[in-house]
Structure formats: C-alpha cells, structure tokens
Image 1: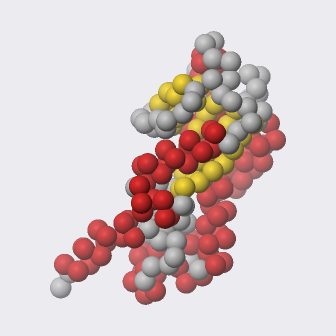
Image 2: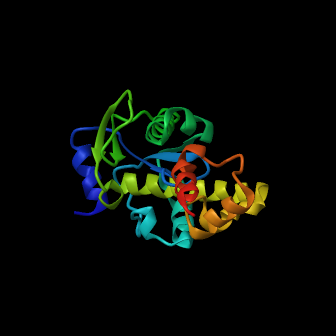
Length: 204
C-alpha cells in the first residue's frame, strides 16, 4: 500500500483527512515544533517519507512542494518555558493541537504520528510509525522538521557559542562540550540536563 492509499482508506469514512507530526522532542535545547497537513484526494508527492530518512536537501525541496500542493497546512510550536512547565510530551501534544487548530480547513479526522493523540475537536487516530505509512503524516513530519531546523539556525546566530547549526540542539558530543564550556543558553531545557549534571558530579 502506498502512503496515499493509506490515507485513502480513511477518506472512505472521513471527508477531510489531516496528518500531524512533531519535531524536536529529544533535543536539549529549543522549542518543539509540530505541523498539520491536508491534501486533496488526488495529490501525490513523489519521494515523501519519514523526515528522518531524508537528507536535509531533500527535505527542503519537499517542504516547498508540500506547501505548494497542500489544501491547507499549519506549523506551530511550544516554547522552552512551556516544556519546563508541563513537560515535553504534553508540549508535543500542545504543538500538534495548535497546528490543527490554526488551519482554515477543519479536518474530520487527524492521523497523529505515534501512540498518543492530542485533545482535538475532531476524531484523532494514533498511527505508530505513521510517517512511514501516511502521506499526510510524512508531509507534516517534513514541515515540522524543516521549520525547526531553520529556527535552530536562527538560534545559532543569536547564541553562536553553542554551535546549534551543527547539532540542532541534540545531545551530541560537541553539544555537551559547549555546555561544559559556556553553561546553558537561554534556549536550553534545564530539565533535560539534570541527568547529565548528576552523572558529571559522580565522576571523580
């Protein structure tokens, strides 16, 4: 079954099918992003897949094509302050909820990547590994990932010491080295660094 055919199985029951996914749950810094996408029933975008399996160049190209061909789309985020207040899982759900609610076209069903769904006004169906099954989810995955990467490049200009352009906030060796050297930036997630500091304090 193709990714579009997967979505078509839901179109038999629902008029407007939306795909939704988030990007940036794992990093030590930065906002978490989410996107929602609605396609016309006849739209097929070649090469669309789970954003993590695509090169950055390919994602950028598909980003433009998705925006051009989608009936509607939305990209939203939840902030570092919100992540610290209500935790990352709740913020991923919040960002997805915001992305769906910001669309002009109101979906009848949202296919959500993963095993949990945000609280939406329409039906919400969790699809495990959905970005490898649904064209709408895969498209949302690409929009969220590219938007977050672009945001992290802006943050790299604002806070150059941490070299966010190289690791996008993920916990790489270089990133930890920069944290050791410069401490936390204003966009770091303190709750994500607790384990690291605890581990460091145990070292002789």
